[in-house]
Image 1 (cartoon, rainbow, N blue to C red):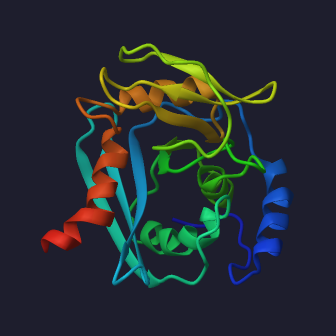
Image 2 (tube, helix red, strand yellow):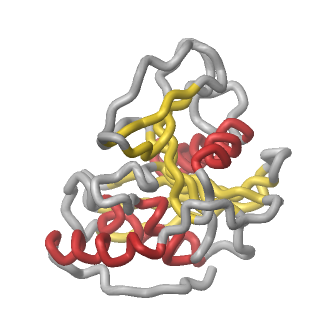
Length: 226
């Protein structure tokens, strides 16, 4: 996959925040995507006492959700863990994994946030802008914001708000499990992001894109299967 926008990654936390503020203006929160034929899940795990980052990208057909291809990359961790700056810790190794794909996916589902972020520029927005590709943030936990109780039924969701601004959706993907935190990343609206997240979810809490990428990034190497 060819990157449409490049910038330095060896930066200070202050410079990283300034770069997020600069690039947030490029985010498009309207539907600028066709009918996807394939969707990609992205996740990053850590190996060797958290010193090596392992990125996994899984590409599935849509709507069948059958595996088309996957790519894994490993790199030393260079950036510290700082809430709100996950992009600078994880995207360098994700770029290497995406570079290993044979074809460009139509939509990215990222383990993390889109605009549900203090500077409205989480990892899904960052990747979406770098590649100019539709992207959704699928967070397993909340970074910021507040919401009402989500009904315990599949497909129910409540707005995630930061003050008066709606920054995402708190989505119940199946009964009896914790909801996910969905936010638009780039070139997609919030309702459409919710739709595709649900369409990629079968009988588990996580969409198949995220679930399979998480397995390759964090579980497979421990079992010796990858």
